[in-house]
Length: 335
Ligand SMILES: NC(=O)C[C@H](N)C(=O)O
Image 1 (tube, rainbow, N blue to C red):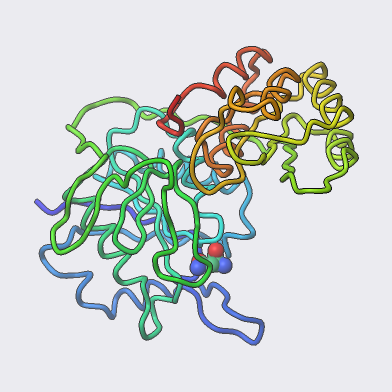
Image 2 (image 1 turned 90 degrees about the vertical axis):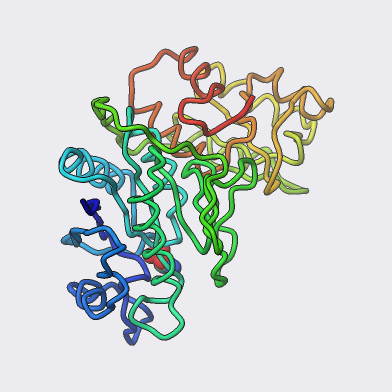
């Protein structure tokens, strides 16, 4: 029997059309384009149901409320389909894939987020390769987690990052190997093919949280951190140097201590593309841990932000929040 895949079309370049102000999503356009492409309807392909969202979005417009809508949509259709594809803009795709990984618990079916850099209806579009592979993989290589397919690779969703603004190889997973590679042969790498099971899917509610994010740079004034902390923030992501280092500026460290005392969690993520935070490596990092900053280990900033929205949406004690931040909930970090 052919597998049944649910495609949730949220927007993004894959279904866009040019306008006088640049590319914009256009209702009904993707469905029409897909209907005219015979490769999607070959007998080797799974059958699919396309649900176009009422408000198609450029993913730059997306917020946690949109993550919730997608998560609830998957839950509402969970029993009717063998797998799920989320067609999404590439700009914030890694954030959504990260957020869904925390929000959808107990997955026994694949959820693959994908999109394209050139609209599907245009010449040389990468949308055909991405959607065709995502459908084929969801049906034949069901890896029961939230993943992201792009170009030739399936990545763990909460490990992925957009790494190229205009190339086709636009995503990478710097601290975790691909789940699967689709070359001449499809090879399962770090992914695990799911055995059918009857685990109930649980969807967690996420509400947008006030979160600050500061990237350190030579010459940064402690006022930048002070100002950020003066806003009503529940958490601060500090993008530090190298293995988690920061200037040993007394005022800056005092700001961070005050944040901890006010139960504003400060998470240390490296601004390097790859690698992990180790605040014990240098005195410049040790100072941060002394000030109460918690390690983000090898989490991407995207996964850290999504995880904070997720954790802060629950009423956890400050200690429990810090504990869960430092442990792997959905394979988002290794420590
Ligand atoms: N390639 C894309 O999909 C970019 C687009 N701006 C989006 O994120 O929706």
